[in-house]
Length: 364
Ligand SMILES: Cc1ncc(COP(=O)(O)O)c(C=O)c1O
Image 1 (cartoon, rainbow, N blue to C red):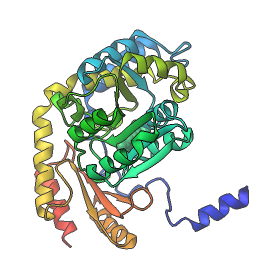
Image 2 (cartoon, rainbow, N blue to C red):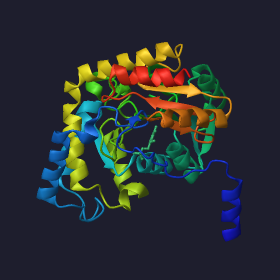
Image 3 (spheres, protein in one colour):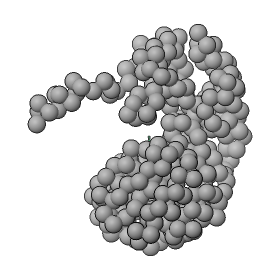
């Protein structure tokens, strides 16, 4: 066993480890953070977390099914359901736990899961755990998705289509109408991950799915509180039937201590601020557009701008050059994403001067 572990580390060229903090930590320009709206440092958000801790304690003290439940969770879940246009919502401890847990318990060996191939690892994890039949379609290729449905749907009673709405590594956007229509046409369930859409896109910033009429019984939408919301945790917005099922069956929900009162208090505050942050969202998108134009249109229409490389070492060299000039970006290597890339995320704290500095170094 230990030999196998050692060999695996030796063979890995991934060098997965914590990001090495630069010497000038605290004084660098950070384009790697997912704190898109800068809410993690918002005084009102922090104060709301502290207030909730004062009232409810520092920890939840147990699973929601035991001592961990409180009106903090229940009231917030009602609000999430309203804002997501679903009947119910359920809070999870993280996006990973939501995706892996929900997909594991919703699917089984007799389920066909049709899956955008660039979906996040947490969703793969859930499907592998259940042993469902996984069929991947080419990224954003809905003709391919249709072909798979045409070919295979007659052999399965239970089908679920799974996609992110804003893809975290490429910053491109799913055609949600096409997904809704195909799910309806073939009687499939639809599972959408709005981790990178929550806070930034859709009506009042509550995610892209809010712009569409989806089948409320057959659509499940998750999103995280760990990115634009600036805290941590996740929601699953769904029908009341699915929520009841998850409470009974979803292991990552049942067998884990609930989020702390601080998290819920801070998250609820940040969530309630989203409708008032329209100008901030527009300004982030304008800055992302400026960067994209300078890079000849790299990426898509979101605040996530990828720069792709053929060779990992080249990408890491550019990342190092940026770091030497006081700029942090994420360097993403296979298998996290099939193509090595610098992942640049524009957030609310960036000024046009910051963007110009980034462009200048990127052009070297
Ligand atoms: C698309 C997507 N879904 C889910 C997750 C997991 O969310 P969390 O970090 O809250 O566990 C991530 C995080 O990277 C993500 O990018």
